[in-house]
Length: 481
Ligand code: GLN
Image (cartoon, rainbow, N blue to C red; front, side, top):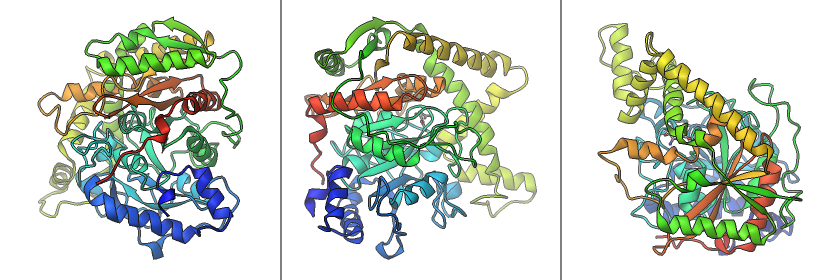
């Protein structure tokens, strides 16, 4: 069975089709891997009992028989959806998110709930109220976040794919730090029905896999219009793997965003590996352009404002009346609201609610929230302008490899800067694909990202696949404790 730990989805499907293994045996195998390794890794908040799994009937869908793990802000009917927060610790989802239904329709099923930063707020999975998730390459380091649990589980070969959410980089950043592939699709490509909202103008489901081909398969199962989510685009379902032929798209021009590589404090080893990746694209036949996108420099600040404002609005619903935890010891209704939120939310979430309400408050909204929205619009214009002259943008995913636990304990701004390169995709709504491009001398993974035009996922996959097949990074895996 051990050949399945790091196998591609295609290999697993072939084995299932050839009758070498049954869906139930496969599920049991991965659950045993969780049992063996996850005590130390900490990627899952819960794995489901083998007998309670809902195996799908479809044996022909793109993910027939393939299990995944879902970030714990995605509703799975009848299961807990805690969002990594005490306030929802015992909350059970009354219905399936559309992505869960689509996974099922495509033949897939879920093995559990993955750890994450509380309400997806963070870049290290350290703000989870429940546990730490470790980086499978080095247990002294964080996996990144906020979808750190989904990503670490996939990187560790505990499960073939994971779903996370992306508000500012929460799948791509951990994917880079754990050496796997992470997609943030175009805003509106995947339904958010049944996903606990964080920043509604930024949120998308993201996909974590070990290879580009696997990622394209999972997107094929999930993408497309959903009448239950008015923000989804009128996009037909399609097979995103069909263009993966190992070659770059015809006449592929890659624009290297130079000012993103010249940021102060950039890790020199990461810098070298990114430049090697650019050379590899050149070798594969890409025309390389060098451009600057001055608006990039505002991305972390704009993201800070917009995400906090939207978080404050979205989290207002957790008041002890409608969902989850209610403080037991209150004298009045107002007391109950205050105590519930004070006892239920962690520090990071509370600080974001305070900042969000501040930037939205009378007298401050124009200076903060509204100006941030204006800059956000300018960013999109600038990125779209650049993408008229090229097929994709080449950017770092992070400026450094995975950091140690509590690395920024007394400097939270440093943690916020983790979003520096990734937030641009969320703010502009454009798709971005994070791909591994090597290891530091300490054997910590490093990655880059390709950003494309609206709905250019197929082209990003094609280019990413060509790069991946020409390099050995996806064949290397961590040794687990
Ligand atoms: N690190 C970012 C934040 O803390 C991104 C989170 C996300 O994409 N969910 O908000």
